[in-house]
Image 1: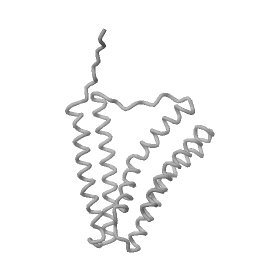
Image 2: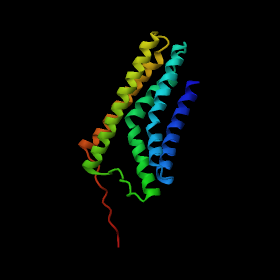
Image 3: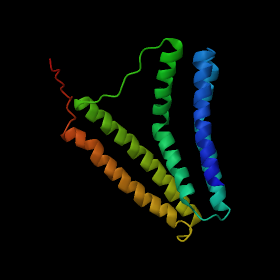
Image 4: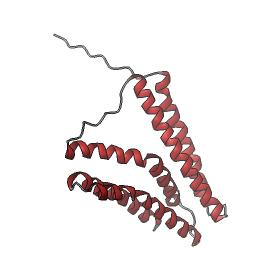
Length: 183
């Protein structure tokens, strides 16, 4: 059941974003659009409450519970960035806004972009790990929370791999490809 609720929360997040942007740019209702966009954190709150209720009810922690913690971390760390990305594209498409910036592909600008992405990932990891440890402490049973500990281990490994990939561009920046035309 918690898996379906997580899927519902993800769908709800994007529905709130989409209806907020449609209200803002197509119907020109900026206040309603802003209200809908500001409601997206309520989805995270609902997910936390549902997860706690499920675990308090005696459920064994599964990957779905871990996924709830990951979702919350990612939503908090990347949510504003995702909404801003969508807002820029809606503004360009429906309100005559400026062309959205593209992510840098080469050089130090690309290296900085990758580092910032990793820092957002680190923030998501910290938040998610705090939620996972909170669930572990709340349940208080190692047998029922082994999946949560596994998620902490695996996510930590993924964070380390992401660090290596993201920071390699600082040492070895991606060079712009030079193409020559033959006559």
